[in-house]
Image 1 (tube, rainbow, N blue to C red):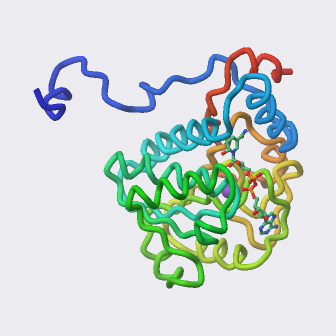
Image 2: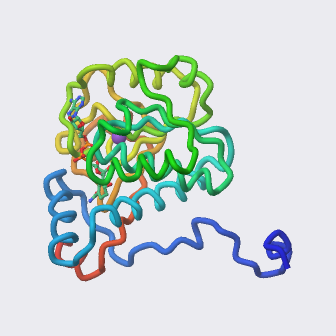
Length: 244
Ligand SMILES: NC(=O)C1=CN([C@@H]2O[C@H](COP(=O)(O)OP(=O)(O)OC[C@H]3O[C@@H](n4cnc5c(N)ncnc54)[C@H](O)[C@@H]3O)[C@@H](O)[C@H]2O)[C@H](O)CC1
Ligand SMILES: [K+]
């Protein structure tokens, strides 16, 4: 029996957020440095390669994006670091769910390093459309998007934005698309909540592992929008080590 008949069967659990498991332990807000310590402990003490953390982050974020915006084309802005790597990962999972996905990358794949480079190569092999800034009409891409995902900068960046990042963020803010930030709205300091003149104004922020302390600062919600915490799949024992 083809899968298309499965959903007709009464009691069939459709793929939805309800079907996605949530950690039993929610971590309190943390600094970016503390979050990076979670990565380090996961890799060094729990033998979890970084690419596994990124795959978990990307898949969890993709499921949430598909739940928040069940249809419409998605433009994913990918920076040069692992925040961008999350974006490449998300693109594959949204494509798998049948969504129309385009990536606007701030660098070519061979300029990327580490886990981000791996995810970008997988996305390329998967045939996902990747446009590189400066080699495409980004204004056209941004104005045509129904959903814009901000995978430009995360915990590894400190404002003010350098180079073309500010222009892309301002063009995204001017669009009528639903805006979803990955981890931290680009342009915001995750520790202080301070925002520069160009800060991604998100309707939703999907933040990894734990909320960032900066999100609690005044007027931060103007840029984070509704915050959802996305699990990166580290063991409960590790979460317990980091829960205050
Ligand atoms: N444990 C977790 O939560 C996990 C988080 N993941 C994701 O990884 C990013 C952090 O990645 P990292 O490579 O350390 O840094 P970024 O991608 O945020 O940025 C680095 C990148 O940006 C350039 N840069 C720095 N400052 C600026 C600036 N002011 N203007 C322009 N460009 C800047 C810098 O040169 C680098 O190229 C985290 O946020 C999560 O999204 C993992 O995927 C999973 C585990
Ligand atoms: K971001």
